[in-house]
Image (cartoon, rainbow, N blue to C red):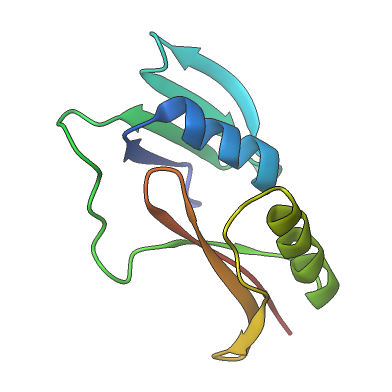
Length: 119
């Protein structure tokens, strides 16, 4: 059995979709309604569904909720962080934490994202 999909409720489906496409390699498959729900897929086949919040205000994620992406090398982590910083995202340089070379940033929808290499 493998995890098939994740549905994240966000206040701005279009902005969150653009973040995952631009920075994390997801491919947009389709959007329903007027940015009411977007379906994306990563290179490994995981489906990410971004759905509009059903209530006003920002989503409050429980601490330490986050989603993580692992890359093949420290150089790949550093390269992505540098491209994100050059693209205007608020992201600190990677550091060693808990045995991983890692950085964190907040995606649209107030989603904490971890990008790391372990090895």
